[in-house]
Image (cartoon, rainbow, N blue to C red; front, side):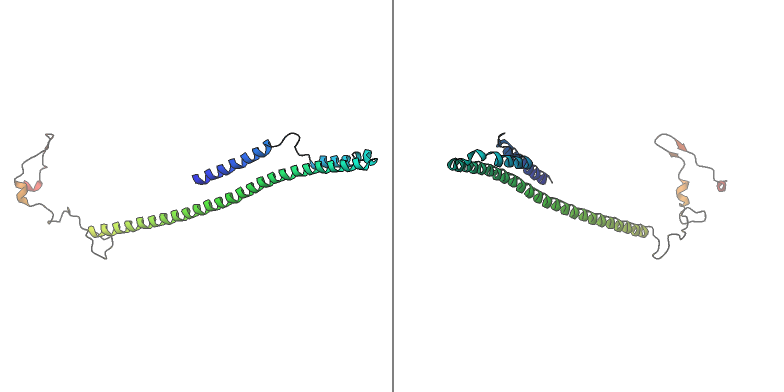
Length: 196
């Protein structure tokens, strides 16, 4: 993107410098007349210039030649400025063509990146869903539930009141008199109604 911007700036500066060069070569005398002024000039020039020269053919011929030279110089100047404006127009057209191709390239690249980003996002989402499914299966296996049973099946409470398998043996309880914590607090065991 930065290379494209630098290229565009360089082409713009080149066009500006060529336009300034074309303007600096013109003198005040050489500035073009409008088409209307030029037509009026030619009309009055043809009426007033030759009427005094009909008496002498040689002088008329000289005037005709000098008129030819001045029109040649004007035509030469006109073609010179036309060439400059043509070159400027040509450079501008080349710039526009290159700018359009650059814009098309940038647009195409952007669309490709956008498509790739969408594809990566979809793949990422599918991977996350796959991991969630695997974790759910692993959790089901770790819970000890038999295969094919529903999660709403009831399981017995391991500390239930009729459950003898999870009760500690009585021999261990007989040797314990008191429990002390690090902070110095003691735990007094509640009185068991069966011990009385």
